[in-house]
Length: 276
Ligand SMILES: Nc1ncnc2c1ncn2[C@@H]1O[C@H](COP(=O)(O)OP(=O)(O)OP(=O)(O)O)[C@@H](O)[C@H]1O
Image 1 (cartoon, rainbow, N blue to C red):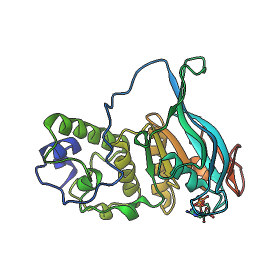
Image 2 (spheres, rainbow, N blue to C red):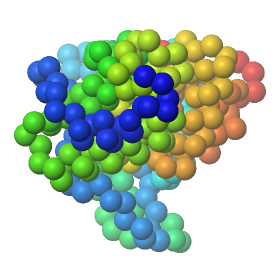
Image 3 (cartoon, rainbow, N blue to C red):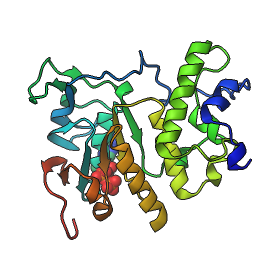
């Protein structure tokens, strides 16, 4: 299929009558109560306070009293040596593991930056996570099936189908996937397009916070530059918290950065110029 005959993602989803092969539900499909964003003068901040994590059955903390705050629609970067606990922290933020102590919440503030109501617990439905090398987890045979994996098909009513189709189209537009063939095998995409697809899979759930673990790892220079450009655009739509060793390429996007020290202690720090 060439680009000019490619149906929109939304049209392809709403017109599809073909049931997807049954697979157990994955974390990707998260029904949400309404997706419209409130337009107010409020601002929110993602807040982590005193988070410690010790995996069950072990004797050492992987994270120690981690605290930080990330304002919405900003780009936060966590850097640090391998094994310091960066991925572990992302997993807690995504709700994949529970902190041993401490809290992870969203705080709404007025224009003056002062809290206007008590903090709300950050629920996993509000968070998207793209793991390192996300293309290794692609399962479907077409791009459309990959991104709509686990979505209700035959039993969904028309209103829900249309809402899902709109979200799908918005996500594809956001990551610049709107001109590729939806029948294509995801594994046949270029490295950069695979990353775009992985981002779209999360964006259809309209997360407020998007966590990215090493988004540039394993890409050639051209794909890395494309992904950096894409992240610059995404930053205007969603709050991004990124773990990466690619400090030089990401530094123009970064609003706030932290170093994760060995032993899981996080400290706000500018991006270093040389090696970590
Ligand atoms: N369930 C677990 N039980 C015990 N130790 C664990 C568990 N999960 C991770 N670890 C250890 O915790 C430490 C932190 O791992 P983590 O993957 O968070 O580091 P990282 O900073 O993301 O590293 P990298 O930059 O290499 O991805 C590592 O020493 C890892 O082996």
